[in-house]
Length: 312
Image (cartoon, rainbow, N blue to C red; front, side, top):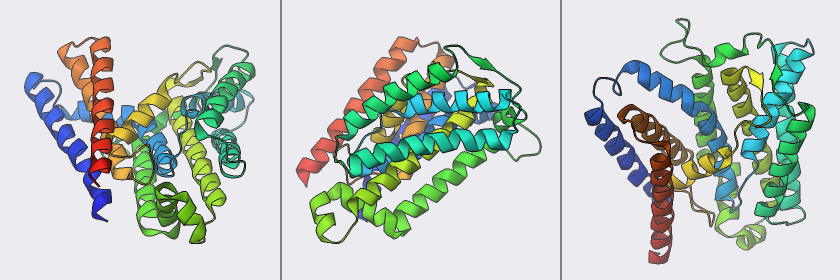
């Protein structure tokens, strides 16, 4: 159990140090409570998608289709609303389509044993093309019918808007499932040594299908939250989001070799990137500098993981 806790201690310390740095550099604006709420709202999409990505990476896989799945979900939600249906059906349609796509990817990875990189790279292109086709290569305007309230601050909800609390519920549920259920133990077993897991009776294909299905469902939920922010269906939205989600998971201590990672670590990684992005904006750092810094942090996290594995 100790090995699973250690990886995100460093990122947590880095998060605290980064927060303290920007609190000193921009004390009048960065430390305001409203800024904390804004960062929480901006992190919901990445945080929800990162829960699913954590499961995928722990099994030794990867999912490059997250950004396209989020964009496709916004299109499905907007298309459903524009057709005169209610918000509940729109949400179910968006999440359902994303879940089906994730399940299909899981079947190809688990049953046919295709490389996750190839499968999800193909899914990324297919979903992006499908989103553009359904939307006729343009944004879909519609009445959000209250879905925009998911990420709008309201006095009816304590501290944060409902979308943030939905993300918190997903994070807690994912962390508990990964840590305390047989499913969670099997996820770690598959990532640690797939052959041994098979010998021990773990249904490896089933676990992989479930993991990718969950990742797809959470990408769909992230797409609903993205729609709440945009209030339009945009087939060109979330380009590069998959890299941000993967970065959050890797920064949080997950190993791309599989077998290691935690939901808590991934959320710390997502928060670290959000703090960096917001803090750099307050102190006037250019976007290209932010991108270089993020890339450097990812490299450092990967290097630390490699050193730790060699040390073992």
